Image (tube, rainbow, N blue to C red; front, side, top):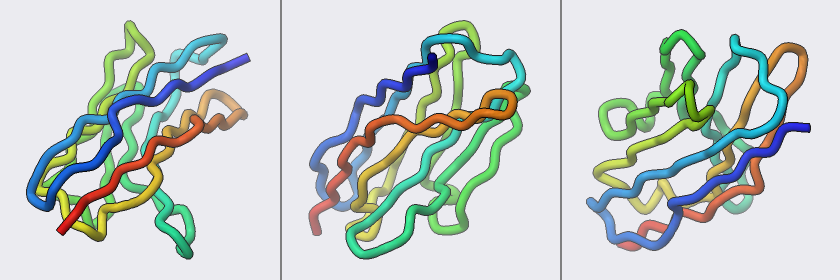
Length: 115
């Protein structure tokens, strides 16, 4: 069984920074993709950024140049540094792991950006 534990959300003023972390435990295939999604009230969940076990990354256009995703394969942990935060970044952020044919979600962490 795979578990994802997220941390690092909170309240920050516009222009500020936060760093999210997500630690995965359990049986995880060495080739996998970890990602961050977010869901704002009344909106669909959307991909923010993803990173493969080889280090290839992709970002939503709305966060390019502001957010950076990284990972530590030895710790099965993914990070996302979020800079220049905007009120529209306010959402619940979810960690996602795709390992083999399986997908897993974290419980979510709230990020609130005040104007």
